[in-house]
Length: 183
Image (cartoon, rainbow, N blue to C red; front, side, top):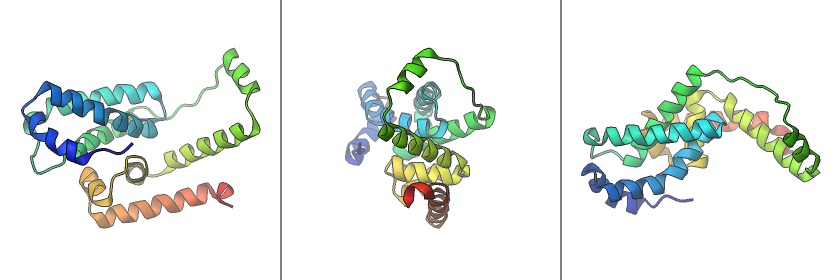
């Protein structure tokens, strides 16, 4: 899903004026992207949904103080990133195995191809979760949200050179952690 930058730029003045139709349209355009970004960060649907909602509430509350020279999309992602980092800091990863009969029924009908894809995706998500937070944010913004390096630099408040270094580091870690799948 590609974000129509021209559409966002036409919405920006209307957002500043708190035009309700523009805010609804902005939400409809950006909500799936923000949710997916947060889901990749947290790996939990309910948490990603809550953080997505909180992101848009914070964005709404800060409309009066938005800098007209900054991208509203970048600002929205910055809010989402900060909320995700705060969540991760407050809630360390905990793993539990439940005794769910429906899970056992579903597991019995899985093919080998499904298992291979599931194991890869699980290992891929685990590899992403091992990245340092700045690397992780850089990778997710680039590969899953379609941001270019200058947009990532704006969201993270770093230089483009730092973004390139973080992306190289992220790719090196992912290559190393997923080498069994790359052979």
